[in-house]
Picture 1 (spheres, one colour):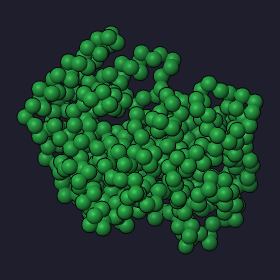
Picture 2 (cartoon, one colour):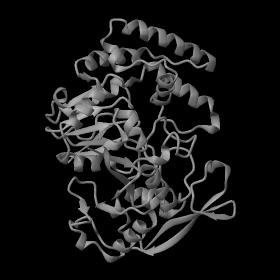
Picture 3 (tube, one colour):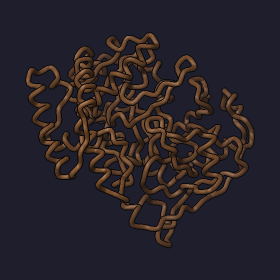
Picture 4 (cartoon, helix red, strand yellow):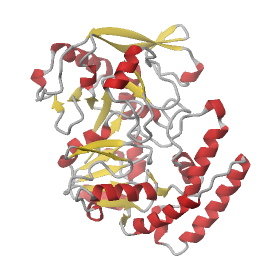
Length: 422
């Protein structure tokens, strides 16, 4: 069977650490969507490592890692990551596999991303400018180049053809970008990519399932950034929800068993877009400071606010979440009062639903106040040790969203996770 770990907010929930924590229980870790805008932070041997494309099971020697067809792959980023992983003594040629159907991010995709964002002026969506959106556009427009194409002698011809098409689009934007250095790095990385394990991903994963192997599907970004169900148009370009597992790996829905959703004990968002519970005061700044809320990939300061249970319940519903993992609970250790959003005031009317288009409404969070626990929880290892105020906070969330918090992360370390059921 296949279990899943995915984000329930606007990304940055700490999924990398959670996947790394559960990885020893699985035979295969598979990334099913997203691109190098993902930043999954791990701590290996006390050192901080940020993975953007390689699945977070990479540091477990007995775990196979698959980059699925739902991912858009930047060969340059992949090569750098492989070098990082190899520096820890991990042989990526042994445990990393890449689906033939995975689409490539080309140098001109990055230029197009930049041109598109610049053209929006004040209406920018907050793109990371890594070429992800244009790569997915070529995928749905049936123009993209895939990893399997690297093995064909016509690869260079295909590249030149699509490069010319992109140049015409850049001319329409009246945008100039020198990509010569990008191209040099790209083709060096392409040669490296050819040396890795390129497989027919859907057969690879289904063969492992038929052998009784345990598979963990790893998501990137978060449910509120989903191309269909997120806060459109301020979203990513892929299906970040459970449905993306089937199309991003080539497995049938009935193969999916547990869906583990990851949420912070509060809320953050990077870039533009609606964020009902955002705090613009000292409390928001304190959350950012204590939580070290800066993008793992971009370094951008994250917008911070209280946990949004309306959005969280929505995310649990569309994903079929049956286990919730709460991260960064320790960040709330020093707050005397906590608040949670239980409904929205939408244009003067109370609602417990996420609106179709948040930007067309005036939305105010309606908040319920809780007493903080005011103690250091970072050293706790058992559920029985959790302070009563934290237990009450979690219990309320469980009842509201209709899914139970099964684990609480109380620090950045691998071992700082409490199994609530023990």
